[in-house]
Length: 482
Ligand code: ADP
Ligand code: GLC
Image (cartoon, rainbow, N blue to C red):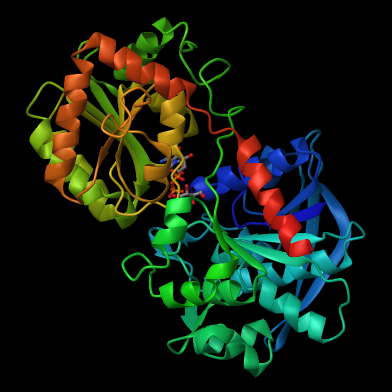
């Protein structure tokens, strides 16, 4: 099969969160499974410098965007054993300091930028000599592609590719004022309300357009697939999702163990495995030293890495830590996002010197070191479509403490669910109290060497490799092709 993936982020070229990891790994997994896969993404600032092997393709986009015609260029990078990757080069839209925002403010023209990106995707899908049979779109930034393809089918495009839309996070829908619809150059009937258009409460809703027009919809865990059809977690689109229920599947993300492992990892201070655990203690000591915490093997070290967004449960985490830091524990956090939450963490660090270390900004190396050096990893998310860090934590023998929601519930096993297979600690209520109780349980586990050894071993043996995940995607592609 020939599959073109389209995403606004792809690791290792651009990344703000798990979307980038997932799409990068899916491309590789499809190639490993013997499929032909390519990826298309914007050419953001800095990519050319970091990847000098990028080559310009003899290709010029000149695409209608409302009343204007907008030009862009195309670059490509062929990588042995990996999906070929195409970059859309429009300096005005993409050569910027951020991907979606600067100084905590979203770019005012995000609608225009990604409607244009979606049009480039359709143009490639239609005219690349390598004719993709399936176009697989990720999140709202590419979600108008199925509608744009349908428009061209109506105008005579025979053999158009089938479309699959993956929702990585229903909370981000790409909602813009009605005027933005003119930029799509779609006929007026595509703006219909209800289940048949891109309109939603008087606004253009890109994700809704994708849900309505894609041949199939997937989301990144089975539990989240169920949750998004409910009013509580449907973010206003639960009705539309219920109408399109027949084409919705939940597929748990895989982990790219070539990147996320403890045995061959340039970022770790020392490698280790479930059979040779000594290296984990070295990583803990070095992490404590690196972030300025007292080096002490006996003190349980809790960590977290996340976008500082409402989704991630920062508010209950701050509350729970406030209470639990009065006991003998340490906490390290890496994150960036809301200035409010950053302030909350800074204040926590100031109140508990020698117990709390906070780091802001994006830091790939430190993220691996936190995963390896901590004893426990906190993910108290309000909702979590899949979540990757809890699965990375498992592989690093770092016990995840998670709220039982979305992919967190699907990937972690609590002692109460299955003592033999337990590899993490789950809590249910979205409150600081419930999280504090889970932290207390974790401390109790830590105090019993046999128990923590058991948890670490089962954690490190859990297998979320892409073989299983990619087979499920291939099944979806086959279904929409027939
Ligand atoms: P989400 O996509 O909702 O942010 P995931 O758990 O799926 O959550 O994926 C988050 C990814 O982003 C992980 O690879 C994590 O290590 C990474 N990440 C998040 N914040 C940072 C940061 N400040 N520095 C480095 N990596 C980060
Ligand atoms: C989104 C979700 C996260 C998921 C990631 C990759 O960013 O918030 O839960 O793991 O996409 O699918």
